[in-house]
Length: 74
Image (cartoon, rainbow, N blue to C red):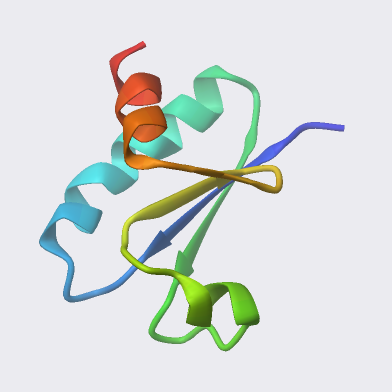
């Protein structure tokens, strides 16, 4: 089963808009499913507990900023 890259973003976050295409392409290249979640509309516990956006999860693992930077530079 393919992992899913979930990209949590907020409409007021300019950087989120800039990074969306990059993470979408990474998911495609790595054979992952891709899902974008607008935290403004999301009511899950996970959305309510996010400390910052953009936030990326691969499977159930949340990537920290260093891991996000690493995956973008690969």
